[in-house]
Amino acid sequence: NEATADGLLRLLSAIRGDFLTPESKREVIRILLEQRFNSMIPAGLPPHATVAHKTGEISTACHDIGIIYLPEREPYIAAILTEFDPEREGRRETVAAISEAIYRSLLETEPKSNED
Image 1 (tube, rainbow, N blue to C red):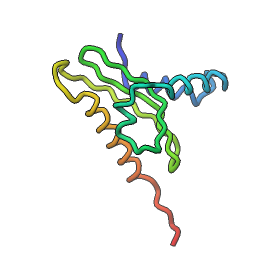
Image 2 (cartoon, one colour):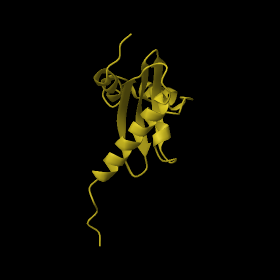
Image 3 (cartoon, one colour):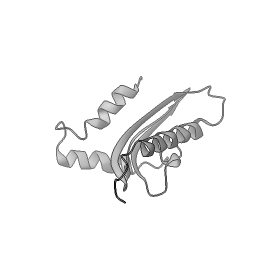
Image 4 (cartoon, rainbow, N blue to C red):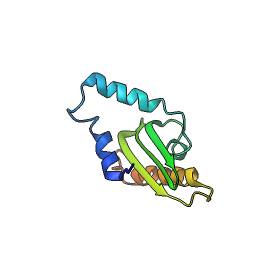
């Protein structure tokens, strides 16, 4: 039972490719949008964000991967994989903080408008 960030990103990126039928793509997104555990990637984003994601926690692993939809930009994919001492608190909060840092970083790199 091993996951890598690269492997998970490739899996979600396949939704944009030709591997799945349009109907299958819609179904995958629908399932991911129904995730009920939203204390990681979504918790680090503004309320208007929509996140199609899958969490995973076992032993020392605490992961979340998803497609983030925001009205002000193109969707992006984030894969946050962490390893923690199982006795330590704050695993989900750390993933949420990383999600927020990614979001803020992407906002800072957006091209500026030349409108006056």
